Amino acid sequence: MALKITLPDASVKEYDNPVSPLQVAEDISRRLADAAVAAEVNGNLVDLNSEINDDASLVIHTFSNPVGKEIYWHSTAHLMAQAVKQLFPEVKVTIGPAIEQGFYYDFDRAEPFSDEELVLIENRMKELSSQNLPYSRKELSKQEAMEMFSNLQEDYKLELIEAIPDGDIISTYTQGDFIDLCRGPHLPDTGRIKAVKLLKTSGAYWRGDEHNKMLKRIYGISFPTNKELNEYIQMLEEAKKRDHRKLGKDLDLFSIDDEVGAGLVLWHPNGALMRHLIEQYWKDEHLKNGYKFVCSPHIGRSNLWHTSGHLGYYHENMYSPMDIEGQEYYIKPMNCPFHIAIYKTTLHSYRELPIRLAELGTVYRYERSGVLHGLMRVRGFTQDDAHIICTAEQVNDEVEKLLEFSMSVLKHFGFENFQIYLSTMPSNPVGEVKDWEMATVSLRSSLEKLNIPYEVDEGGGAFYGPKIDIKIKDALNRSWQCTTIQFDFNLPQRFNMEYIGADNHSHKPYMIHRAIFGSLERFFGTLLEYHAGNMPLWLCPIQVMVMPITDVQIDYAKDINQQFTKNGIRAEVDLRSEKIGYKIREAEMRKIPYMCIIGKKEFEDTSVTLRRHTIGDLGSMSLQEALDKMESELQ
Image (cartoon, rainbow, N blue to C red):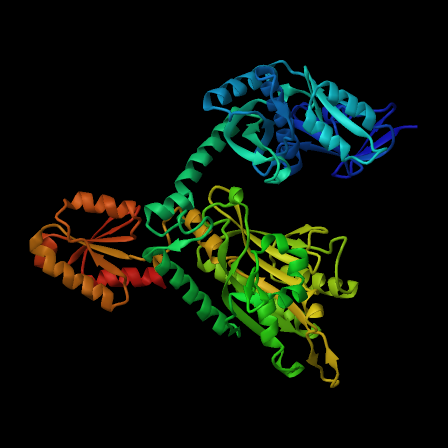
């Protein structure tokens, strides 16, 4: 009886004998077989050389999809560990996963790896790749695995094995003289790893616990072709130029001072003005969309956080309590309990709903120093928090409005490409299943009604409700988390929220958390990197720099500057006795959008010469023409 293999396009291939995924790939095309990384048989990931004995559905994964990339990079991590062990036999290996871009491996070694040693490791990896060493899988019992890694004196592997339940099958992978504990799958051989680059080193605690030993981590990336690797390296160079930490310093926007504290942002005048403009736009748009502003304190009694569940589920991310007159107070990690307290000060009728409460509320969360990163990971940040409290009948309309509002705000800042994810009920939900189903249907139908493409993250919702996440894709194809629209079935129950319905009985409202920016700090950093510091004109702290060429034009330049200011354009005059070329270059470095040059001709003609950052000379024109050009760009 023929063995039937069903492919993703529903076509069927038949075989008289057991067959491997690689053989099927070869039957389809030589090109697919060469590009294949691993396979999925009846939904289970397997090696390409594994045997299929029964009828099955088959997917061949290549580097072109996320699953293929993860397997490719994980196999490269094994290759790196092999190279390290050959060059430095005393080193102990720990874990080496694939990550979003590439891979890393953590090693127990006394001293950090130097740049010269990274070159040695990279070259050894290339040698091992050229040897086409097969990745060979072996299954063994827990006892056999303990004996094997005990003989290898790999203590960290023994610790991992000890945590595996008795009776579970354990697998290892071997290539050449290197063996590693791994569930797989892996590439067929090392020869498929064509282009490798080791990127950087860092320290990392074993299992992420600061009480454990500090290990030495090496990050790397690999590709099937040198062309792809070169493109990636070029992207990294561009990313360095766009790094918000560099731009923040170059443009004098913000700083983080060790004397003040790690993860605490100091906003300089230029950055504070930009932040003010963002906040003002946010406030104006929220008023137009029916929101009511609230303000809440920075600390709250421990009872509040017990009721909300934060002390039970989120305690490790909160700061130590303060003793105030014998009672414990905590600095707030979230705004939600305060908004609920405001809602509960009055018993509401269904006629008052929906109620939309919004706040730019600063919160504080403990982050380990090792994960702090500029504005992206901080310890104090401002959330653009809103809570929509509504009836079941209002949910669909509110979700649709939320999506339209969120997309409108993000597009106003110049964002164009988005990734949207719908996260559904996990295995440990709170609340009624019917509420989860209704909320999920509402999120899904709103996305589809507005023709917004999305992916489903099955089971990826928080325990308290389904959600939509909106990520921004930038010019380098990187994704940045921004908006979250999140149902919450937990807090309304914990705080006993209610409203009086049309039947004159008490009902529990639906509550939707919503943050468009996520946090102002992270959004600001994302905005800087997305635009490479070349911000939209309306957001620039200085929109035009007026530059007299000689002292003779200073009074005229001051008058021009005053006219710009009167017309709502943020302008400054560069009165330094530097050459005009120097002034222009400096303004370009500061990414000031417009430069207004005032020389002898402009003085005599009562005109201006305008330059645009990154574009160049726009020619001579009247002041009114210059104003019209800027105001047109601002609309």
